[in-house]
Length: 236
Ligand code: F6R
Image 1: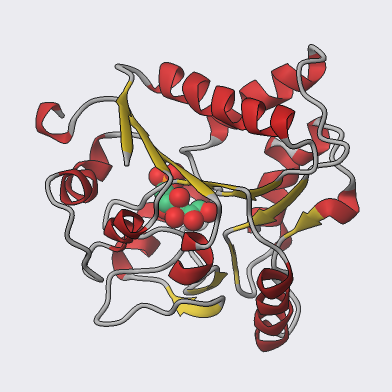
Image 2: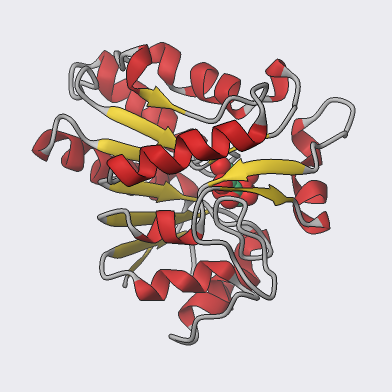
């Protein structure tokens, strides 16, 4: 596992963007696994800049998103977030975007996405991490599902995400890639933003043990992971 401390979120976003752009240059038909939330916003802004300045071409690229809320309003969906913050500002073909449909029967969406991951391998997976160590919506638990599934959100996640919802009413379930789906990506880029992730990051960096109580530790099982964080957890 390669760990990079950058000193600032701006620098973390810059380093992450460089990794994505270099992967895209090497493989124009890159399948990029994407995250939502606050963490990747700076990266998406820099990817848009790169496209506008002619430094990136997404015309052959494909994307798949880690997760989507079940039965949320369209305006609260991760699909809308992705269009607003990235897709509508770059030249990615609409048919090259894969994200769960918030309004379709969830079991059918799970089956559709499981087929997608049987047939496709993510080249580069961008991840954030929740304060409780979740990746995607794989929450700390006794056991963690390996394939795409419907996940009840942990209370800590509902509280952490309430800031995104005008009425504070966070959906209680999401469709998420499983840990096995994440670990099958050829390479993984974990971007850690902010003080609230300190304990999860410490759990990842202080030991090579894997525990379902801190799902991000499963990244120890992967041979090609880059972690980019502002400061070591001890300094936070
Ligand atoms: C989002 C996702 C989540 C977030 C995590 C951190 O698609 O899968 O695991 O990466 O909750 O969220 P932020 O970045 O808002 O702190």
